[in-house]
Amino acid sequence: MPYRLTVLGTGYLGATHAACMAELGFEVLALDVDQSKIERLRRGELPIHEPGLEEVLRRNLDSGRLRFTTSYEEVAKFGDVHFVCVGTPQKKGERAADVSYLDAVVESLAPHLDRECLVVGKSTVPVGTAERLAEKLVRLAPAGTQTELAWNPEFLREGFAVRDTLRPDRIVIGVTSERAEKILRDVYAPLGEVPIVVTDFPTAELVKSAANAFLATKISFINAMAEVCEAAGGDVTQLSAALAYDERIGGRYLNAGLGFGGGCLPKDIRAFTARADELGAGHALAFLREVDEINLRRRARMVGLAGEVLGGSFGGRRVAVLGAAFKPNSDDIRDSPALDVAVKIAELGGLVTLYDPAALANARAAHPQLGYAESALEAASGAEVVLLLTEWQEFVSLDPEDLGAVVAARVIVDGRNALDVELWRGAGWHYRALGRP
Ligand code: UGA
Image 1 (cartoon, rainbow, N blue to C red):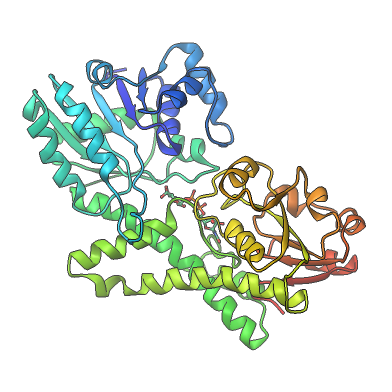
Image 2 (tube, rainbow, N blue to C red):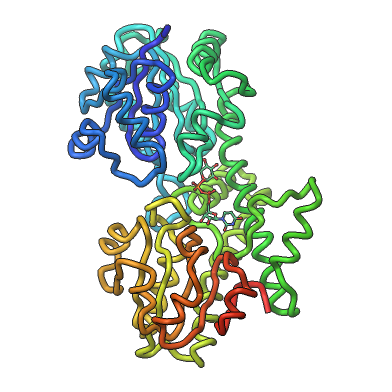
């Protein structure tokens, strides 16, 4: 392999990128400032639930191609290409993104860079960040202009992180030199035939913001249709299935329900509008505020619908909540619609018992006031209403008779339009869902 790679930050993105690059045959050294995280990773333990990733991690630890450190000095000595994969969370009380972790990485790494190398940003950032960091890098690095920055946004989905990294739809590289372009083309060559789009810095940064804005808009579009269906007596699942036959529209990301959450879509659309405001282009993204509001209204509607089926009040009523993760196959509870709903119902006096196949520990730590169970049946035991809020396959394939045997009343609200209505109604359940009669 022509280059030795480093990965800075070992969260969802960094841990996946490091393990997958080693899987492609590169020698990889990954850094995090969190010593305990690094120790776990060295033992082959993932701090996150990500199907298939632990196997890749262990295989490459065993082969010796993948190593972990907390030393910037070691990283600078080792690497020819440094991938920056730290988070850019939403600033407290603001819509804008907090890019301070990125600045901290550049400020920690650059003073050790005394030879030619490429630093590659992968984090999602407000447009203009790359240009600012490029200048900072060259200013702080002893090697000066022998160091260079490139921007290479990441499009992986949690739950499919390994697949999305090893078989991406496209690779976007924002560069200011042919040298940087060549290095990144070489790095990704082992992936085989993948379309590569080469751009300037602002375009590369914007592609990522635009992609997430589009996905969020598509989800909120169908959820807006769900609101209209509720008002008019229509069925949004049939509406969405009919729209999906039009190839220009397509059926993916057209599932109406509780809406989007997680560490990306909600904060990315907010950061995008904040940055557009700064650039004097806020009017162009005004619609994204509505996208955000439609999304949040679904959570409120879910609480309302659950209250409705209970006859108007949650006080002292037993509510089973199935799902805490922001989506299935993940233990991530950041901005989780499911947890948001569970917490609101508990605030309104409901006795909530929650179960999730992977996110229980995270949910418990964040919201110790809720009740927790070790299985769906245990959570539903004695419940007057069951709420399906994250569509884990384990919940979708629940047997209505098994669940019916433990609940106090056969009442279910499907927040993800994931269950077979006929089956559940056929088993004597009162079935309600978002956007359907
Ligand atoms: C999202 C993007 O899909 C990735 O391409 C991007 O790289 C990533 O953000 C990121 O910026 O890092 P992710 O947050 O893992 O990935 O989750 P998605 O699978 O996109 O789901 C987001 C949310 O939308 C979930 O809460 C999901 O339940 C919801 N959703 C999705 C719907 O409500 N309806 C749909 O039809 C699809």
